[in-house]
Length: 219
Image (cartoon, rainbow, N blue to C red):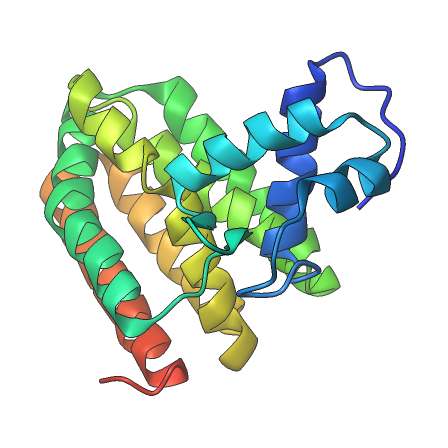
């Protein structure tokens, strides 16, 4: 995590992204306490933006708050993985099916861009970048569904899904397999095959959940 910032964003936003990346790269370990004073000193900011960032990350599922221990990095277990992926299995294929039916070339282009950028991230074995590109790809496909509430619900799962992905990839770096599956989903979407894209996505999500559960020893 860097100690200085020059980005044109609020301190809270920059601190938020730094802590998020630290969690997704496993620089900040599962269960590790997140002490405001320590993070503030490390990042060269006051405790206020750190406190605000931790609240946001708690809402998104990357940080856990305990009344006795304070904030810590979320630990992924089978219950969490099943809960997140159960919701995704229900909502996301339907959202993608609707998006394809509505046809949004810009969104398909963004999905294709994420796939292209992933090639470099796979070569570099950059898990944090892959997690972010993975959610960018998925969001590009579902965000055109025409139902803002459905999009919001799926967006709320993004950080949790990214963290779960990192856990799965640590045990089984199956990035190339996932990106091959992504290409198949995108190809169906580009053809206007809404049902085909939805079914390929449903299989993709389910298969990855099985690999995650195998990685954490719960099937």
